[in-house]
Length: 179
Image 1 (cartoon, rainbow, N blue to C red):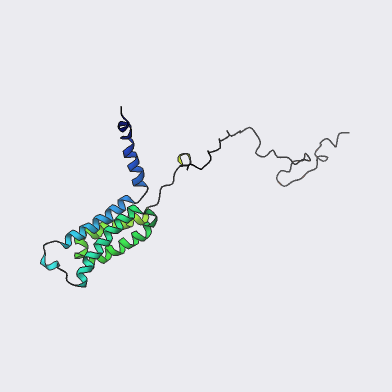
Image 2: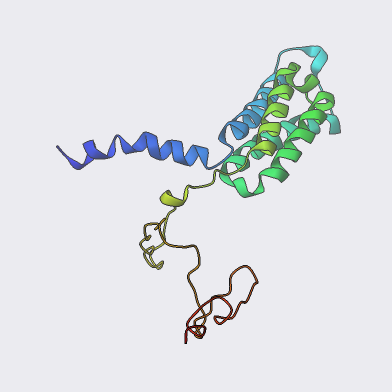
């Protein structure tokens, strides 16, 4: 067996962890919606031809949507900004990009933006938290002792104060009463 055979099973797990650490599906849907709008702009339909500034917006909106999709995957920390921008541009594409890429691109973009807005990073379990090289090792946990009282801390004088009632040892029948 060579070293390459041992690395193969770890690749799907590594891919899954990387994908789950970011709004991957949302970014993919936003980028696909923008790409679909760009494709419909090149459709051979004479009615859908845009000229001038509106023609520039027809190419600019889907291009920014593709960029938003890529940036959602690349920088998940900024997901709220990119999600809101992609949802806004998805709605604007209705006017600028052939009815939002014949509705398909607009719907892909809106669903992807909503998924990105709703996505939150997964919390790691306490037992599986990663440590850096400089962190000290975790302290060993002591087993719980159910037979011991909850608080057995007595002040140096020997009188334990429990529940706010301080009763001297003499009145309780302690060592001072014998005598």
